[in-house]
Image (tube, rainbow, N blue to C red; front, side, top):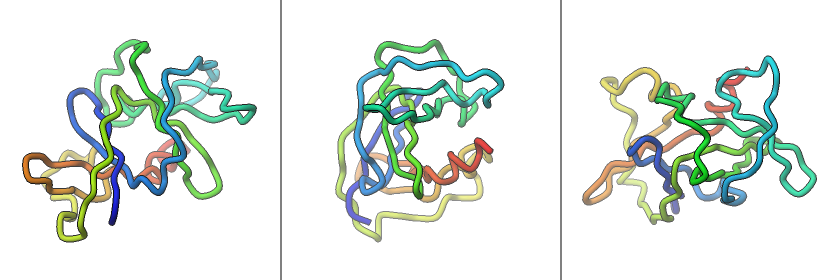
Length: 140
């Protein structure tokens, strides 16, 4: 697999393949989108490109909380599109080997299974490996 970019949501540690991450940004001003999915936090202007900001807390059915000045934007590429995933806090980049990755267990809650593609076993932690394509397809 290689490297994973880690981040936090409601105290849980998630990650995404670093190859899909375009950049990580501090909180960005968002413009609300009328009639959009409740999971869409709004639109951000990324150096002249308009990008949807998806609130991952809402995608996982967590308490959405207020828009926090500490929220971070993980800008990822999904096919030809670019989207911003709004997370509570950014973590670090970790190196992983293929043998550390496992399929998502059937006992994991359905809301996690829909968006998580694998589980990564670290010596003292487990990471939920997010599939951004599934996040975006859930917006349609």
